[in-house]
Amino acid sequence: MAIMVSELAPGKWHYSLLLAVQQSDDLLVFKPIVEDLTGHETGTEAWIDGVLGVVAYLGLGHRENLP
Image 1 (spheres, rainbow, N blue to C red):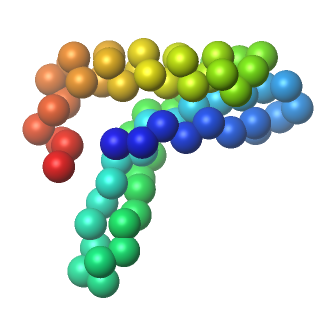
Image 2: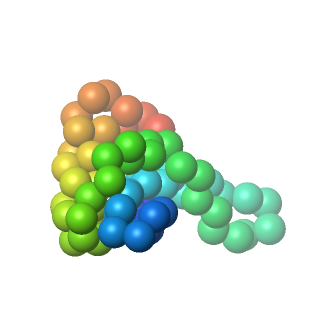
């Protein structure tokens, strides 16, 4: 699992939770599983919210989806 933080509009930072998907050609590919709808003022705020998103995701019984 990975957290990606991006500035989708000036001053509006969002996070996405990404899950690794293994492909036959040994490339590591990530697919988004959660996308943040809240625009944060800084990338750091979005990242911290993303960490909390990982904790919530893992606490909701989705662990079987992780490698």
